[in-house]
Image (cartoon, rainbow, N blue to C red; front, side):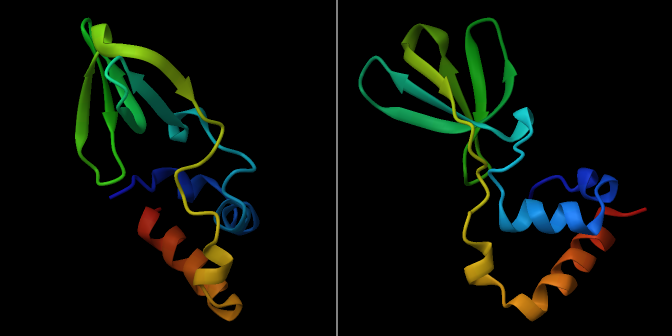
Amino acid sequence: APQLEWVAQRGPARLLEDILDPNRNVDEAFRTTVVTLVDGRVVSGLRVRDEAADIVLVDAGGREVRVPRASIEELAVTPLSPMPGNMADQVPEDALPDLVAFLRAAAGP
């Protein structure tokens, strides 16, 4: 599950903005890294660490993926959030205040 500690540091208005327009202010830690391998495959995810011979990503399923540096043809970081951009279509407008309150409560004090 995603880490929600940052939610407690944002006010309700900023959190709502992050939900409805996730690509407006994407923190670098949440930008997707897209790796094209020399064999043509493409791997993407959040870059969690660099090791001597590998970079380590976490894919959309939450699994760690090790990518050997020697197998990388191209590496790019997108400016987009991995969060779906259509949350306004998924959550009824009258439920948004409840969603914001829930997220802030889940983040703790």
